Length: 363
Ligand code: SAH
Ligand code: SF4
Image (cartoon, helix red, strand yellow):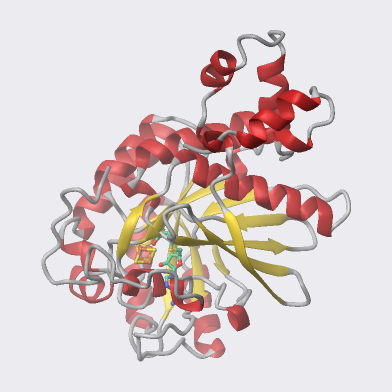
């Protein structure tokens, strides 16, 4: 239990001896303004002190290190959790927006070969409070570092597979949207393609964005990069995405990490087009970032651009993601526990093992 894990009803119960507005006052402060209760001068000092002394109301994240890159426009925070696990949160400022990239799990069980988090294995799901607190950190950091700037966007593209942790994810989404006040269209959940999770996500019937990390458009190639394809083959994934498109009327986007000589040929582009057209999907090309256990490299920029042109000529809206934070290993797929040794034992689940038994790994 931590500060952001408590529900409003629990706050009300906890503060039942206080005036009835007190719980709402604290709730608003920690969500809308990202102010910790002990810094809230509008509540009595005695209450502030007693909240500060209550272990279950302590923040879940303690900052271990802060790295900056891109002229301080990109910052990566390394947080330690109370069980010594670490997680990373990346804050990126652009001319028109500030986006935080947050983690949903400590580690990841999906074992994608080219991803630093996947190479490391799975430790545990993050709680709702641990997810929400990352956003609160970003709000407060944006405010202190960049004047009155507001955090505008939240993307679940940090460590972990959000749709393997749907219970905590959905509660966190609601908090970020309703209580913190970030519009659903400014919140993106990225998934490797967990079919039951996508179905549940669709049933929320909200305006959140869904991004699918595709990387290859046939089963054989995708399995070699993204082993979960064995459990959720492309045909089944595309069927559930078509359903999602029909019932929510939301477009999806596909993420495609461009790997030199692996998934960047004209033929790869044609296969991707065939998948995108019926879904009216957009494509996000990410030049592959280097990770410790993957020998391949990113496609040359000229290749990324020509791949993008082929897609665009077929009418697919395509963007090339700019490569933020590569120097501080804060870029896509580079997030891992490599910077500190805090425990340092192996993940509970060996990364990328051939047979994926998902029991206990999906919530
Ligand atoms: N587990 C979720 C969200 C976190 S990964 C998912 O896979 O979608 C966020 C994005 O970074 C995904 O699109 C992922 O495929 C991509 N990614 C992983 N490793 C990468 C790397 N080395 N270079 C570029 N992108 C990478
Ligand atoms: Fe997990 Fe996403 Fe990395 Fe795959 S790409 S291992 S799903 S974090």
